[in-house]
Amino acid sequence: MTGKTHLAIGTAAAVCLLHPGTPMEWVIGTAAAAVGSVICDVDVSTSNSHEKLNQISALTVLAAAAVCFLEFRFHLGILRNFNRQSSWFRLLTGFLILLAICTFGKSRPHRSFMHSIPCWILLSAVVYYMYPALMAGFSVGMLSHMAADLLNRKKVRLLYPLKWGLCFDICSSYGFVSRILTRAAGAVFTAVSLVLFLIYFLSATGRI
Image (cartoon, rainbow, N blue to C red; front, top):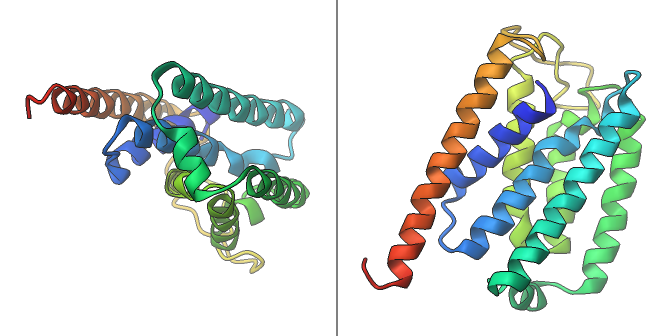
């Protein structure tokens, strides 16, 4: 699957499965799912691996910037919630641990360690340590990436370091099915988000 496909599926899965009850939860969950949905591909070992890493880094920075902007523009309570659940020390040390794990994963073959259940558990635990509110969205995004890649023709080593892998051989990474999934997931994300924000608005105005 392409990065756009994973991003669309991951964010759509997050809003559908997590049912964010407030705008703050929607912002945090969506941003975390966006990063989780693409982080697996730091292990891409082709000639454009540096470009892929740059794209993932840029998306992470963009997600963080969007969260900060929305917090300071609309006062969603994210900073207050962060101060209750975590600290800047935990955020920094957790990020360094996350970076170390991804550095190791980048040296492994594609769809091995970074696409495995052990890595999913490990990274989810690190994200929880950094800021618990991020963990659910990140975990859903990363899990959606692993699930989507099972549709491709190259085996995913879900139980790394075991050599065993699984794939359903349904589509190619850049094929028709991938494009359909991107559009379908994007439509679902947009529709569910609009419904949620309508509910938020009606609740805030006392109409429901």
